Length: 86
Image (cartoon, rainbow, N blue to C red; front, top):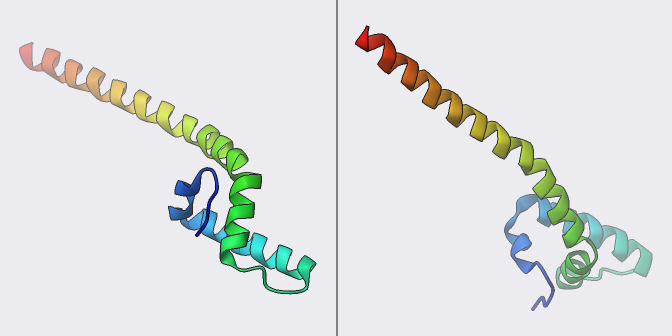
């Protein structure tokens, strides 16, 4: 069983790929397979905070774009209402 911070990240495919890469690198260093659980625990403890910060920062532009689109839709709806009244 893996005991580590940010364990919910294990649900993400990209995180699983990063853990597999980490497992390979660390296994090469150790000269033997360290196993998925050890690799996952190591990766989560060493890199998950950075991963979360990166993911959050890359999501900000998307959230901002969604806000702009929502506002634009409201403006378009208002313009259409006004045009119908004329």
